[in-house]
Image (cartoon, rainbow, N blue to C red):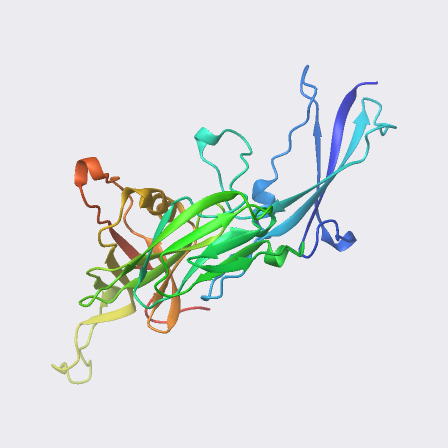
Length: 328
């Protein structure tokens, strides 16, 4: 008998691979063979994404979950196949994405979870670097070595290494501790005039990545309101008070925006700027608070050393909340 229908049970959970229970069953899907096809395709990415809780309070936690699919194969008489059924597969999910050019279901980096090979930090300030624990054996920052261990738990699959202040080079090694996979250069910026701002976003790998804006910043304040015109005359005396206006204001609120400048960075960071623009989740370290922001700038012109010599990016952000608290 030929394959006709597939029932798919989708388990989504945290912890270790395969540790799901009945309460972790989130979806039951069914799809049938179309025409002369021999495979059944399920699109589960958006279903899984609903269970990835992406929040950030300067805490750099691993935001990954396990997804186990259990597929039951049925023939045209709705009878379960005696071989190859059920078929079970387990995947680790992050809130990442591939590009169109990467084709379907691309496997992203299994070691360093940033695209660029250079980062910029303020002088005397430590940084964070996301790595995938399964694919890294050790990391050498200048002359200091950190061994990477993978317990198998989803809460440590993405680990954030601390780059000590004023470091210069980070080397990422394979699990054999011998094969050099990536080298990242660290540039420490002395900025005596402006206050640098740290912007954190989820990149294409689903990891938190920091981007510092070192140069001039400008904040703006945009007020919105509604008005109506009222009658202020007193019928009994046919008079009105000059201190009582005819126009009344209501539904008043405001939003803030901030314009940031990276300062001069190399074109290797074009990928970082691109992923920032494509991110659904962005935060700014604003004083002692970590606040959500949204990119207001929608058009990006990439800068190269050939065309522009030095590249500074100016980006406008809106703070993602109203100034007057109207959370209900």
